[in-house]
Amino acid sequence: MTIVGAGVIGVSWARLFSEGGWEVRVSDPRPDLHELVERELAGLPVAASEDLAAAVSGADFVQEAGPERVEIKEEMFATLATHTRDDVVLASSSSSLLPSVIAKGNPAAGRIVIGHPFNPPELMPLVEVVPGPETTARTVDRAVEVYRDLGKLPIRLKKEIPGFVGNRLQKVFNDQATYLVQQGVIDVQDLDDLVRASLGLRWAVTGPFQSGTLGGGPAGMRHLVEHVGSQLTFETGSPDPARLDAVLTAVEDAYGTGEAAYERLVELRDVRTRAVLQPLGWPEARSADGPRQ
Ligand SMILES: NC(=O)c1ccc[n+]([C@@H]2O[C@H](COP(=O)([O-])OP(=O)(O)OC[C@H]3O[C@@H](n4cnc5c(N)ncnc54)[C@H](O)[C@@H]3O)[C@@H](O)[C@H]2O)c1
Image (tube, rainbow, N blue to C red):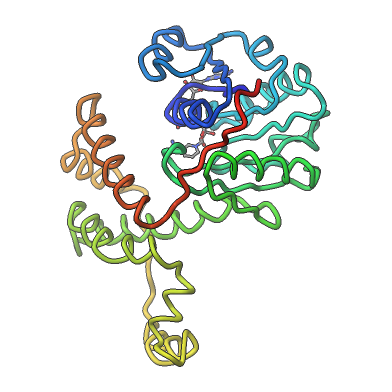
């Protein structure tokens, strides 16, 4: 299989697929590609190639994780369409671009699907599988099967919508977080702690609807909506884009920037994520079918 793009997401996908029994090729025009693969994916069956056409020829599955720019995706998928067999799924990790837009005019539109992970794909169970109007059922079924074999939880959306589901929810939530900081209600770190100590923990074990069912007691979510929900009539407001810079500066002050700060935060996040995944019973299973191309 081939990963297109060796950035934050592509490297994590490469680790997941290779540890899951796939022989992986990673393609990216970046000049440090070989060094990066040697450093980040040492000891795994991962080969590097700057040449996209060569990297995808013979692949059984393609996971694209290149830049989030439609003109670049269109160009990459045109190359993928030409240089892959007509039974090969071409999955894009895009966080927001509609599959119909990426696949527009592409002769392989039926094979193009969104397989949107949450960062980092090697740890987060979810992959949102989003078909465009031309995506075939076989493509969706195959993508779901591949992600499931990797121990992921693939969830297929019934139809495309900008931002899909995860990022639509995240956008509403993050906008409100920014608004509350801009309004001087709370600072950045307290907001993060508040979420970790309440909604984050709750949503790791129940979704919003299940949580609503519990919040209403034996009478269920209907009771919660009528009783508490009916009083939540305030306007939520929106962040002011002109004052976003001050919030970003506060985030940088809180967490730092640069390689060392990033590595420290990645390690902390990964240790904590692993610590909660296991007791929550997320599948460890990896495909034992042996290497595939
Ligand atoms: N970062 C996230 O949290 C996140 C989460 C889920 C999905 N995604 C999606 O994953 C994709 C990759 O995001 P990222 O954060 O890893 O970006 P990134 O900027 O870290 O990596 C993109 C990589 O693509 C490479 N690239 C540029 N042109 C290319 C080409 N023609 N062929 C192959 N590779 C090329 C770049 O050199 C770079 O290494 C995007 O579509 C993004 O929306 C990102």
